[in-house]
Image 1 (tube, one colour):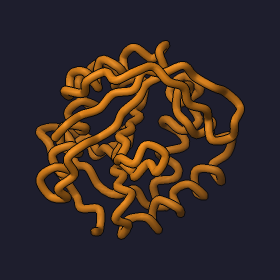
Image 2 (cartoon, rainbow, N blue to C red; image 1 turned 135 degrees about the vertical axis):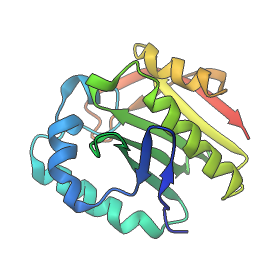
Image 3 (cartoon, rainbow, N blue to C red; image 1 turned 45 degrees about the vertical axis):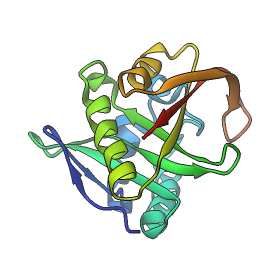
Length: 175
């Protein structure tokens, strides 16, 4: 199903496109603090961001991958992204998100994730979501708990490149 445009009180959630490369690169994908705990590595050039966004555009019609850019209604600025994809390893859809540092702690990520979860449940009929966070990334854990995710167990994950491994906490949300 095509990734639709969604709306919250403060945000428009829309599919990311190649034309977003400059914003994504400048605002978060090249920020070492913002991407520290992400599975993907820091984008070291705008070309890396363009490659990723090309993949995102191709996945807009996928039934296993839904990702949105978070656009502030008030300013029209793209400030983050998030969504869910089918994780074959755990046989569930996994939620993830990232946002510019200047918007941390304002409830924006939770607001976007609530809408994304609602879409997963109400439109797609998904009944369980998986989430994880690096143990040192306490703020991300707070978001999962605020959204109703329940702790399952400790685990670990690595960056896709294998450059780092993180101890994590794994959570499940029954919808």
